[in-house]
Length: 396
Image (tube, rainbow, N blue to C red; front, top):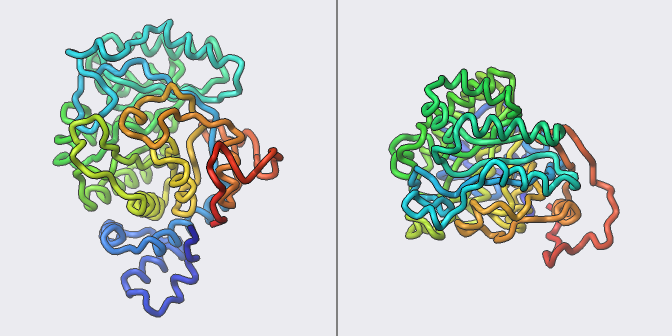
């Protein structure tokens, strides 16, 4: 998909004045307001939004597109919480349908990757009483003792809020303890939508939006980094998305600790919201673009390719996205159980490199904190036009 460049947009005599004002702001590197963000959701044409978002993306990163070699570990899919959008968890009364790994079970998974050049283990799952502060502290210590070079990115404020409350310790004390045990960064999950009138309906009982933000703030104050997400395409309205983005932007102004924003598409299989239609690919691309335009203080915007599929992930690289997550092993089940495009989400490094190069971008392998591991721009492979049956798209 080709998107017009920003200079072409600004020269269009038919462009409405309010859209021209925002385009000029983006061109000049100025921040847009919440009202302008809402206007983009309500009125912004796809090509226009792509032009603005791609301008920001290329100003920050050029054609570089990042990925890493990672694997996911999900200790359990049994959960105390009953989020209506969740297809992954099994409630306590049906825990026999799920899995509950012991510490040794998890370490067996980690050891399975000993001979592979992965740089990150991503740990997140359901919430149960046995997965408490001592459990996770010991898990982090054992992982770092076993493989010191493996970056531990683990748990969301949903888990931390629960285990700290259970342990009767403050967020500050708890996050400091996790850091000491070997936690190195936090994923962005559990944010959903911050607005209470929506969050209470889809994720009642979990930590509030304010608590989610506070735990990330404390983590940032410890000098550490984290990511942020937004679950979109369910019962929220555009104003709730803008409010969510604004709260992320304000915290980032304060701490500078976020590194990546990841929009997460609601998938409607096997959950209590299956009656809702899913967002279209056009809406997905518009949402990526507006996130990139609005979050001017975030370095990166990531598309989680197993959730949206490889073709849409390629398209997203023209709509503000500069990161496609990682190669990811097929132990990742959270999204596949919700109807993700990729039922067995694993790609070789060669596949991922070819997917990125097929749309004219430069594939860069990174570590979790965006240190460059290897530049694959000029790497040679046997056939750079096809990868696992996916035809190369036209250069954007």
